[in-house]
Length: 193
Image 1 (cartoon, rainbow, N blue to C red):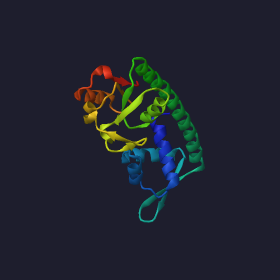
Image 2 (image 1 turned 90 degrees about the vertical axis):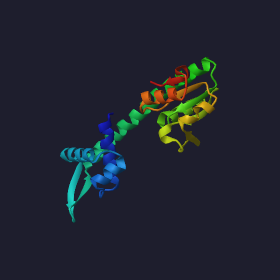
Image 3 (image 1 turned 135 degrees about the horizontal axis):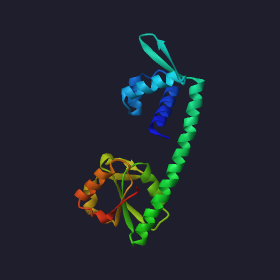
Image 4 (image 1 turned 180 degrees about the vertical axis):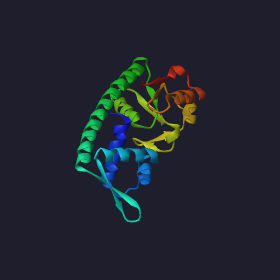
């Protein structure tokens, strides 16, 4: 499943929920550009997945067609398979990394990242003797994840940990540079690639 399929699925879902959405509202709600929404809707209409009708005051109304519902069902099934396989692969890789930390005598870890991989890592951590010291993510600092406050990387010098496991899929190079800038030795940084 690629990003286009995910966009198509999300657009079909949103149109099904609210046929009165404008393209601008869809773009804002889905956090993608207006041009991209326009391109997808035109393509969906050409394929017969969406019907576009004009309503008073120069507004358009979008309706998911039966063919569009079938496509949405197919994409939903693909997305579930993709997510399940992602979870299995991530869990296997995280268990390997956590096992290596334990084998090296480590006991305390920090997760850098506040997304899905962090959640999977936290679940996997429960099967080890390791403990999580903190979740750090400069972009999400101040938010909560799994009942833990997400902290800014500036606190790293005050924490006692053996390894930092990068559980973010965003800008890994920038994250490594941030960690090194805060004086974290490269030997204490582990990635999940």
